[in-house]
Amino acid sequence: MENLSVKYYREGRKKKLIILGILFATIILSLYALNKGAAGILFWQTFQSLFGKGQDISNIVIWNIRLPRVIGGIVVGGGLAMAGTIMQTCLGNPLASPSILGISSAAAFGANIAIVFFNAGLVGNEAISINNPYIVTIFAFGFSTLAMFCILSIARLKSFSRESIILAGVAFNSLFTAGSTLIQYFAEDFQIAAMVFWTFGDLGRVSWKEVGILTTFCLLVFIFFMGKRWDFNALDSGEDSAISLGVDVDKIRFISMTLASLLTAVTVSFMGAIGFVGLIAPQMMRRIIGVDHRYLIPASAIMGSFILLFSDTLARTIISPIVLPVGAITSFFGAPLFLSLLIKGESRR
Image (cartoon, rainbow, N blue to C red; front, side, top):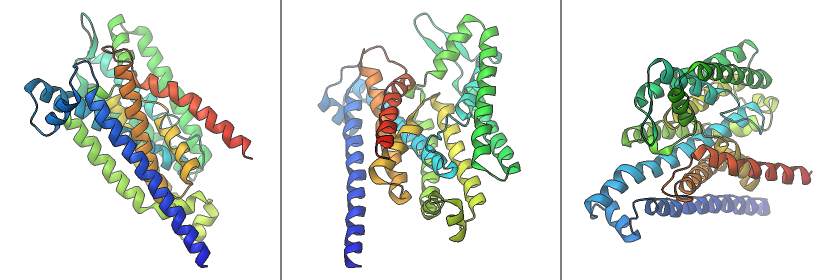
């Protein structure tokens, strides 16, 4: 018994050290991201601005542009990774992610409606922008929430079978993708440009107000998920095992899927479509620290923050001053990394 307890303690300490290591790397990356950009602010000027002792120009760049973007990337990456972790656990499917359930495509459909029918899209002389972002955000959030409730309602009719949720998500994903295609087909050229621009995903869209909303919601959902960590551990071992341990499987699955879907809806409506973060971060952490949700939830959230922040920093600096779409960067790196994880997983069997 003593050997088992010592081994248990060492395993827990090892997982905590891994989480702290990823957190430290994310902090270092955040400082690097704050210092990099087209403005050409020096490293010591960045630190001065963070403490309110910098020049006016550097203070504006750091506090109004870069810092909200960095914090927004950390919060959104963590939120998408948390949502992916819980969806994979609740559905018992390692390939489950926010985009698979059609939430992202529903948000894109709502944004397209706002751009075309409420004239929220704008093409300037040198750049494409969204001239009424709040209408786009409201419509994107509304349609993604509608898709979520439709999927969960259909799932309840089928007694919350995991297959019915996934199939309903695939069907709604196809439906909203087709709807977006039809809207784009009949739209004007500048409207199509604005719709494509929105779907790219951009961390630079958020202000401190949006960062506050995202942070508050992600923190509340994180607290709930951590409070149910033992239920998720039981659910991960199988429905029969979870029921025998006293877990109300249907209830925990419904509430958790609802919160994970809402979390995705909030982040996508503010930032646009950002793929692969909610899929790859949980998969990486499951292979590194295991399936214990006491460690898996925070580890996945921090890894998601690191992945998205790294992708955004690369998007801003690789061909600066041109900013590449962060969604393309996450997909570009996420796809081969995910394939390598699958190959390694199969080779171990």
